[in-house]
Image (cartoon, rainbow, N blue to C red; front, side):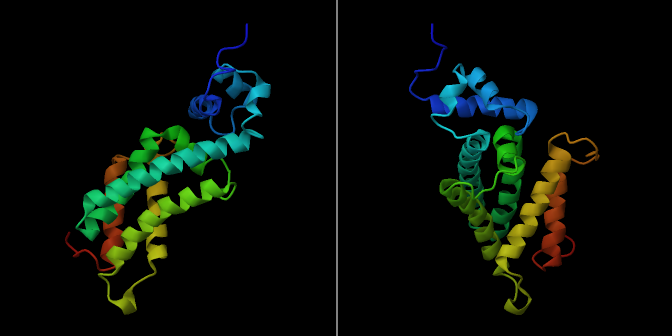
Length: 205
């Protein structure tokens, strides 16, 4: 009797879903294609009908993750409007929320070592996600006098790095990442300090 799933209509997505579970349990480099095939209920040979290797499978998981991530960032940005400040802060919080809700996708995107340029589709959606934060930074930076205004790409990169650091150290149970503060509070206060340094918040806010 053939293994369950070998002939079903969406084997590609079944392999993605199986690999997501393995990534959450073992990390993006902690499983083999054979394990993903077994978890999906197919033969290892069937995997190669859809993916040339493990990195291609991880790249597809990352692509789907960036789609979710970009949608979440855009929703957060829109919810903050018409305040440029609220939109900017909301995109930072969306990063934290995404990492918590979609840990498998997050690891495939940021911890697998697979480049966002591995496939054209992955590069496009990764750029879309980054563009949301850059747009938020650009709108907020417009409130700074032009001669003192840093590039929007720099502002968005700073906040992305801060958000990523909070996630990695304090929001995912990383060993050594101990603090009496909640990750949300760390991120909010860090963004506040950064924005005060740019003159976008009053000193006592």
